[in-house]
Length: 121
Image (cartoon, rainbow, N blue to C red; front, side, top):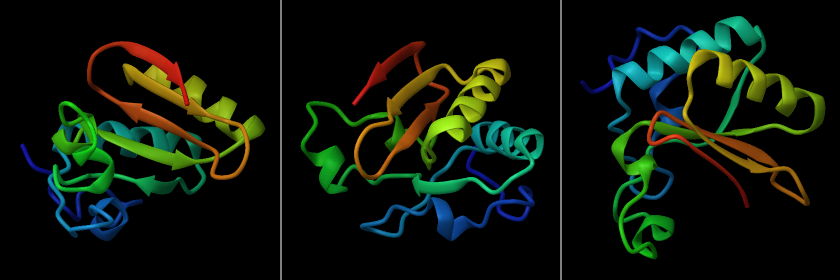
């Protein structure tokens, strides 16, 4: 089921819109889990990527579209101790896909509810 905007007190639709097309098909179950993470973390989460259209330049380069196109993934800008805390909470809450980019500029964590896996960028 597509997200019901207004149901997630700490997020606005535009934060998770596709950065290239403006589309947004975030899934309600994912957004509820993300809202639980935000509530427990008790600090703002900087969403750097939410929904991505299959036409988004990153997705278009892939052999098959990724989980961002399914509305069950986001990237959160964070680093250091904050990244560790968010990661710990995400694992407790059952996020199953974890991507870690914690070097150089643009550090973030990728969280999703797709297949269970972990990777680094």
